[in-house]
Image (cartoon, rainbow, N blue to C red; front, top):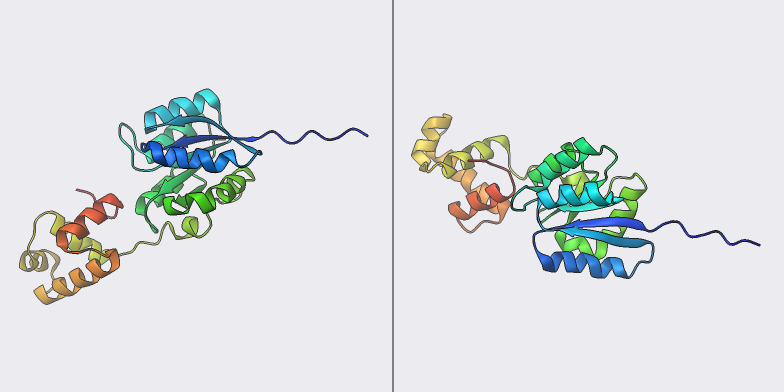
Amino acid sequence: MTEHAPPPAIRILAVDDHPLLRDGIASVIEGHPDMQLVAEAANGREAVEACLLHRPDITLMDIQMPVLNGIDATLAIRAAWPEARVVVLTTYKGDVQATRALQAGACGVLLKEMIRKGVIEAVRAAHAGRPAGGPETAAAGALPLSAREVDVLREVARGGHNREIGTRLGISEDTVKAHMKSIMSRLEAKDRTHAVTIALQRGIIEL
């Protein structure tokens, strides 16, 4: 009786500008014989080159990287190779940039803090054509702030004081203060400057 050969290993490309995170992905994958890390990249441009050279089954793609970010890299990869499957890695739940990555063609989102526990299932899900990343993918579009709070924070980022912001937005100074209190609570920010920094990092506002 002839034994069936095992299916080929799932070929993976790991993309992140931090070597320690790539090492962490590699160490997890090593323990699974049905997976193989075929290449690594430290920025989006390298990711595009490596993806088109190695044609991995799954690319694990960080969003925030130098040279070329993960969203633009995903767009470039999918434009050149529509069958490519990309799972984006993000630091924050509800990251607006993760939503943009999904719109760019990524098939899932995985929180970096969940890599050791979740990367294997995410890879297998993506390889099987299912949404990868579980709740993170579903929550990616959940904006942490209301539209008005985004307006207020955008004005804060431009250097406006509460009274000036209220005048520009047609609301009272007390309402601006109430919005800022809510913003700092939702973003877990220490102060106004910290709130702006977090919002910029997460793609909630742009300058």
